[in-house]
Picture 1: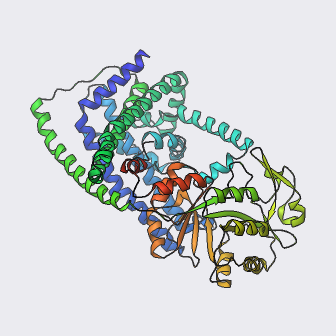
Picture 2 (picture 1 turned 180 degrees about the horizontal axis):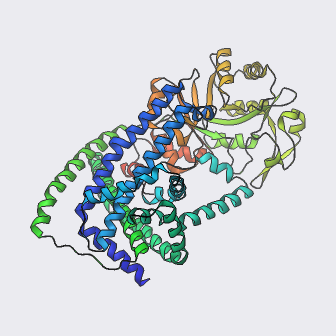
Length: 590
């Protein structure tokens, strides 16, 4: 523990002494990232779409898209650019830390030259080890270094939710995650070893990290925990202290709350950019100290006059950035004062206290204030429609049986179980009758299993026409071709396509799309509003995700918690305090 404290003190000392070097380096990194890397990546994607003739990439066409020779070439180039960016970004910090801890003078140009000499390994087979290394460390990097390119890379929520829905899935997920985390930690020193030692290969760096971490793993983990805990404590403390003026102003002088909120948000944004940059610098200092065991604190003499002269332009830049951010935030917060009309859509009914896709779940969803209730239907062997999500009975009924091979009457006799609750399987007509009695509309998702009758769409339309709900109900499916046919068949029916993945602009001849939240971008939201086409985002079960998309005023949010979503929508009005809006926007903190 004494050594850990010494390493942390040394890291803080070095960062303070060389603070102007870090300011310059992080400024260059951010400029390069936002003015070059992100635009270049976006341009390359647009070029791939144009050359291949695709309007957008979905789960239906991604396999043929990635198999295109031009896409393969451009993807390899993108991966190489990403690896080089991470290498230069972190390599620069590692080499700076290495020189600082030994009290050695350095120049940025000499560090750049040293990094350039190792680039040859990126054009060899050994680059595969670096790809594996970064893939293993990506979850840690996206948490510790949220301003890097790894921030938005994660597993889509619908995949993890499906995995975590069963005990076997949870155990398998936990086991695999534990193994990957352990391998990632054992190999965590690969990059600092590779960048600092001039004549070592990627493979040898990987092996050295593995051997070193075998004896120093606990010490390394302790330092990382200390680093993250301290960083989190500082962030929370600054958040509390920084928002006190706004909290008081909203209650004592409401007319000045908007301006105060804009200033507060600008202050917090700038402070947290600095804090996350410091975390990245601390991370590099600790990694180098652990790898090369350098307890000696390098010192540098700088006159007070020199320091004072260098502070002036930095303070001026900070002031200008603060003013610009404040003006942008005031304008943005002012626009957020409205009552959103986002529809609250209950996913498979209300599953809390009920079994999904059942009459009881439908009733509970209506009582919870849902505007629409989403149900899944499939066609049975006798041409009827049953309300059921899975293709088989295994998960909910605990029996072997394929829905497409059974009759509706057979299915309705079965009891299904979920989370300690039991219920009966319902038909589409059963749900429509209850929904009409409760005066709530349905969002019907047609699950296509491949054994449907040729007249499956006319039969569905006949059911809806029978109950006079064609003008008020919604129908969606992952089968875009069938939904396009359905829209042509009944123009007044609101029809949509479900996407688990989408990259690129949407050009569909339907009324709405339902898209998994991981792929929803600001650009897509604006594009669909101009189209116009409704956007339903699924499946939002986190309060922050719900708040984010309700604040963006998307057409609908599909959630397992319609009561929570309804309350959040109610709060998103002119009566909601600006403080809550600010905390919602600073989502990378909490």
